[in-house]
Length: 323
Image (cartoon, rainbow, N blue to C red; front, side, top):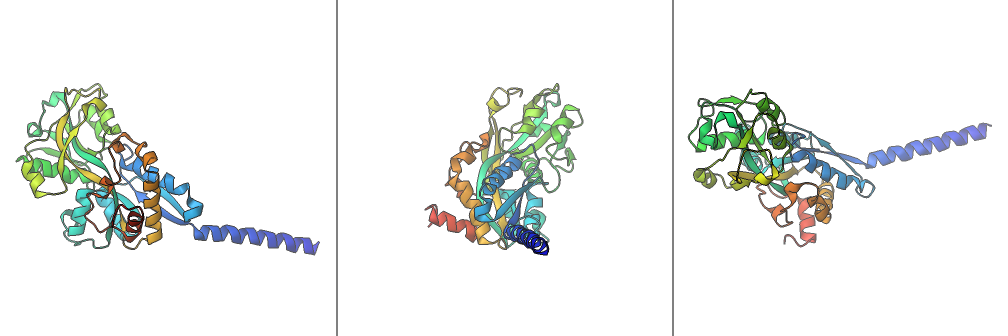
């Protein structure tokens, strides 16, 4: 009987050690995204899903976190609270150069680029009863610029400044999360809101489907802005994606790119695995959201102002995407 007891204990101990070793070998990584109505959240989810399919091969378990957006994600990656973050290309540039929110902290030298994803348009929607068809018409109105720490807030400030509107004096500025803005617009508490996002976007589908009629507002006369900041480019809002919007044609604006960033401190094999899974399953990845429909592998290496992480570079050289 004693022998049987010892055997049972030995088997149990062996099972415990096996489980413990398996857990020890599994490295957990978190991808910071944005609001759940944007494209960042499903993007992070898609990447995590691909990696988790091969968790035994890579020893990785990826999770996704909804966050306050680009600035939060850069800071969390730099602090080691996140391994990866989805960040607007303009914010990646500013962090590397020690500009905007990073003026006091200085250049974020450990920031590393992995790849860029989809183009994002600086999108401005307003209630029809606000009488705004162009950004200049919003003078004196109540406008949501986006929460502090979000990418679109600085985009909104840049857009207003470019057309001669002081966002601190000429409008009533709000700092609400983009996911909350459609409901607040429909409630009549704001006249318009910005959101830098890939299209179609759940937030704008919600905003243009309510009882209060809503239109997309053009952002024009910004040539000087585009010359000043190389990470900005002209863009359009595809109206066909929003049958509820009170517009007859696509709306001109400007935009940036969503990019995946990490830290120089994240191991090469972890970044290699993430990169490999996205690029090896490229066609599957493209099908996950309409915003990815125009993606090419080559375009995913554009808009990266931080140095490419060695783990990602290893894959690009293997795949013949970089020399």
